[in-house]
Amino acid sequence: MEKATEQGVPEGGEPKNVAAVVADILTKECPSSTFLQNIGLESSSKKKFNKYVAALDAHVQELEYRLEKERRVAKLMREELVEVKKKSEETEAARATEYQLLLQRVEATVARFARLMDLFEGKIV
Image (cartoon, rainbow, N blue to C red; front, side, top):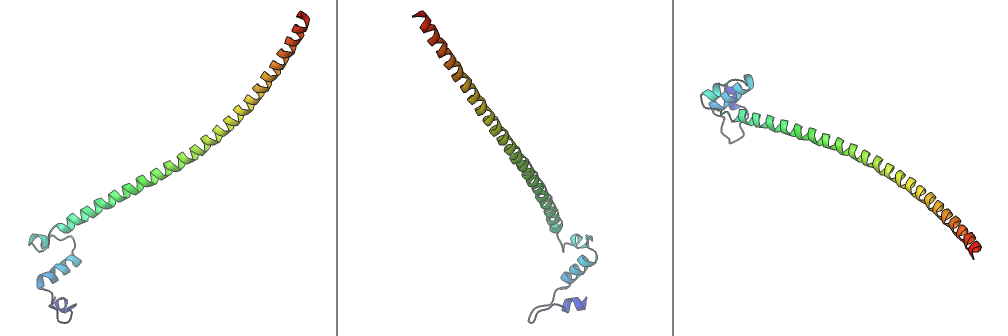
């Protein structure tokens, strides 16, 4: 204990008091001891701090998990959006082709109708 009080004393500094040395040794040798708390040399603030740190770590892990989950969901949604756009473009192209075919049929029908009208007008007049 005397060595501990004399060790680490900076020049011109005061040596550690006996209570601080005992607290250091007890903390190192038996960290679960409640002796220091019982005699009032150490508060339970370390335990509260450790609980707070543990709770904070758990919260951080939960947030990281949620973030990773959100990223996976966003990635899946982007992939799904790409597929939907591709299908939409294919459908639009098919509709455009169908529209052109229908337009050609209508034009052919109109042309036939016009020929028939010309034939009927020639016979009636």
